[in-house]
Amino acid sequence: MILFPAIDLKNGKVVRLLQGRFDNMTQYATNPVTVAQKWESLGAQWLHVVDLDGAQTGQMNNMEWIFNIVRSVKIPVQVGGGVRSEEIISRLISGGVSRVILGTRVVEDETFLDKVLAKWPDQVAVSLDHSGGFVVTRGWAVISPWTVIDLAKKLERLGLKYLISTNIVKDGMLQGPDYQGLKDLLSAVKISVIASGGISGLDDLKTLMAMNKVNLLGAITGKAIYEGKLDFSEAVAVCSTNV
Picture (cartoon, rainbow, N blue to C red):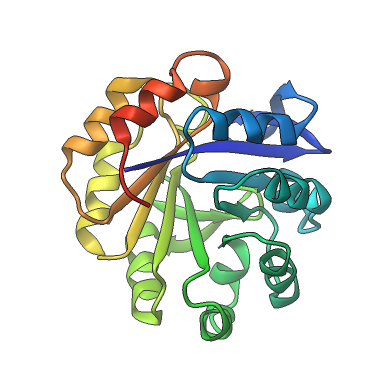
């Protein structure tokens, strides 16, 4: 299982939100490149970078920081947050991003993912951010009519290869992932799934691995590693797998 350290960007700073709320934000660093290099040095196989300005407004304000991160490390980087056009996807991939994460546009425009997968079948993931079983969009502010399972099945039929599942109630709470929701999702589809939200320590990662689900590709961790609740090097050793 791959452990993805999260680097959430807001106005060029590394921050974390509590349950996706922009009015409850903690700043951890002022130089995202230094943070990226730190996680790489501690054994990260991938980086997970989110432009929170993009998620909130649809305008990616941290693009140059993203490219600086990509240039500063040798490991692959996946990026999301406000990616709502083919132009932005193309720009990110041309800039060295290995995987682009989509969300709002896919939920709101049924034709968009078809076009994207035709061009970048192996370099696109969709983030299913959800609350109460329903997918949420636009920086977690709008509840869609789609259930997580129904939308995941639809995306699988369209040929999507990677999903990220975030229960926003768990995000930033350090109370453990949504295990049952993940089990249900992993059983419903064969797509590779990355778990996100709620990782509080090593035991949570061991519990995820103990599910023995072949399509559980990895887990994203943020607050736990920034606040010292999870030793990243130790966690990587436990989760270690071939990319």
